[in-house]
Length: 235
Image (cartoon, rainbow, N blue to C red; front, top):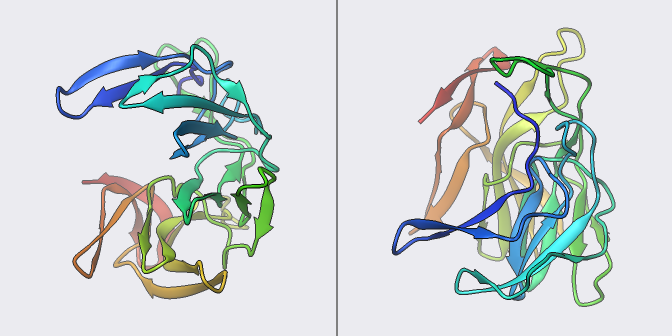
């Protein structure tokens, strides 16, 4: 089931468990990179209203204690490459956007059950960084193209650790290919490495680090050790 992109934004008060509205984005976006940085909520990239067309616009909104301090989003420097499903990380007071893809499933117009159609997707390995100069810089690329990693990352010992995702589709079957590598980006040396593998391939998983242990939960896993295409959603 697929629906077109939206412009609505919301904030959750984790104490009262109540949702509130934030000013809507200037235009609808699907799966943009989003992160809090220097007192502003940054939203960048993603796809347009059809979920397929990559967009590069970048906006920010001043926020404090879950409340907007401005009535509308401010335009910022566009990201060099558009598209959804990226990791967006703040580390050492720098904003980083990692991986992602161009293209995605599109909603079929008028479908009462929200059917979708698939076109070509291009998964990439780009890493972009924004710092005091407010100019996007290219950092060393990931070891392989990786997408669907929005929340599949955590910070450990001044490194970014990313687990799973999706990479370039199978050259013959054209099916989506899931990833089980665990990648590490050392923020001291700016070098990537593969530090392990998950028990199975998984995309759109949630990753955390606590008391020396790396955890992941939920997402969509592979069909088995010999078939990297997606099977069932896991909890």
